[in-house]
Length: 285
Image (cartoon, rainbow, N blue to C red; front, side):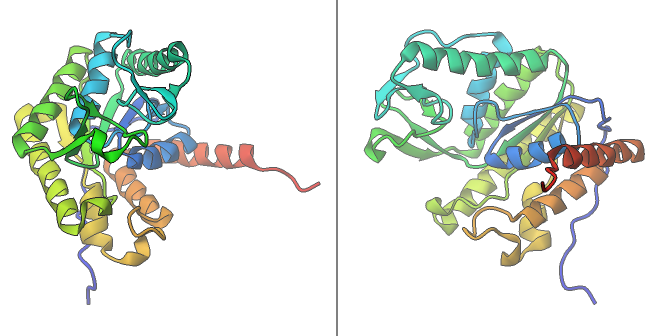
């Protein structure tokens, strides 16, 4: 007797070796998976600019990183803590504009340098809602500005797909040959239950368009479906009922490993995890 619909175990069209560089950009779910890969000893860079939830913000970040553009003068907004780069997380703010620019450009340069190693790129999408500044610029993070500073809109499927195509073309221009899209299972309850479902559906349809368009360059990993259709139980959510619990993320990581890792890679990852745990151990004196 079956009590749940288990996700079909997938085999990816390519393999991730233990030496394969991995770049994760997108929602905070990218950090959850990226940190587990780092613990297993993989060469991974995850969200150096902080979480990016919507397709436009991810594409804007890649626009700078792939073209080696730097932030120079008119990209900062004055706000509660002085100068704010609304494209990225709240850590990119402060009273010294030059210091903010230096921090942002250091993060962008880190992505650009990492792309030179031809990583597999995972793009994790969280929301199809965007917040625009009075100048029409999409904010990656609202930095605790007053809510009436922004206008809020839901991207259409066509708009979301256009931003994802822009991201793919930018990465392809840097020689990237493998891009994996996934939709974050994190529930954006501030959008309301119906709004969250509409947002996720928009992302799923947009990703489907792009994956079908680019063939072997792009593929999809079903993080969203693993939690919503396979686990499908509140015990697999954290206390906020929005984020997957550590157990759920471990389960997703297990499926990802089965999908992409060879037996040799899984063995190397297990040894890497042992080394990480040993390094973190502190003896009781």
